[in-house]
Image 1 (tube, rainbow, N blue to C red):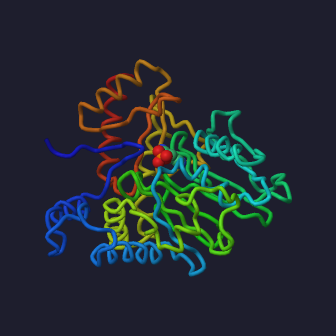
Image 2 (cartoon, rainbow, N blue to C red):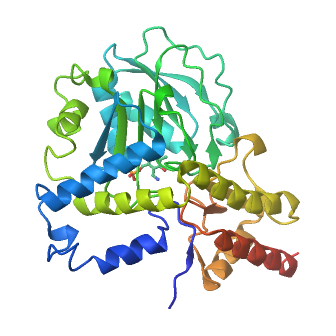
Image 3 (cartoon, helix red, strand yellow):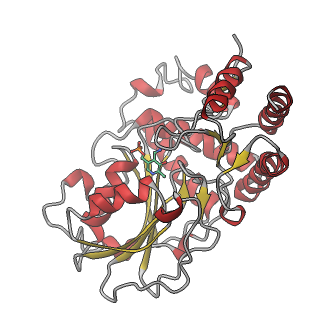
Length: 361
Ligand code: PMP
């Protein structure tokens, strides 16, 4: 059987040429006689892999020299604790609640200090991004936290919140490397890689050096969660998720070849437009997000009839369009169209949706 069009929210589709290259190098990585999976993380070959991955990421994102890049393990959810443990020096932080992942991050942070929920879009099932131009942020808050792209609900910040001089911390798990960002506007940018960048098991934390210069806010912070220790050891304090980082490195090179983040943005906007234009004109399918806050990555939609939604997901699967079922907490459908989803995947999906609409009108 050939490859399907995989619309999974994560782990998700990766560039085919990256997978092929990894397959070719599986038994013998560049004459070392072994797989990257079998290689010491202290070896010369691996040192080159991790250093080159960091360099390519720095080039792609234009990461300023005063920011550290750390490759971590533990799932993006571990960062929900690492953020307060490292940054909550005054014991207080502001959180903007735009979905499950921000909600979970806030609940976790509450174990370590006071969490002030300064805005939320819970009133309309997280279908929009709240106005963040003039929030009531406590003076002594250590940071303002956002989930920049909401994987489940399909919303994305189009402008960053006015943090009124506070540090901005962003979970970019589901929009990582999907378009250019100005890293200097953030104190911390972090994300799990299993959507746009690589296999599950790696997260990338980009943190401004001065924020970790004195070590974590909590002295009992476990060594493994201490960003300063991780940064001082170039992500090699202990064994990192070696193979995952190697694949991320290949994806960075693929993105560079695709025109960098500007190229990625154009590619993603084109795909998203095809799908949103269809949703806006359809008599059967409807998008669930206000147009101005729509994500380029995760596109939720419904027919308004649960039985018909189920029928659609089943028939789509049979036709080679996988993982279109919406998140278990919201139902309906969701097409995740990350960087590696080709344009023809979206075009074919829309053609299939048109046919389904005609047959079920
Ligand atoms: N943040 C966002 C935006 C996510 O979409 C997810 C997972 N889908 C997470 C955090 C949690 O990631 P993990 O499963 O790696 O802990």
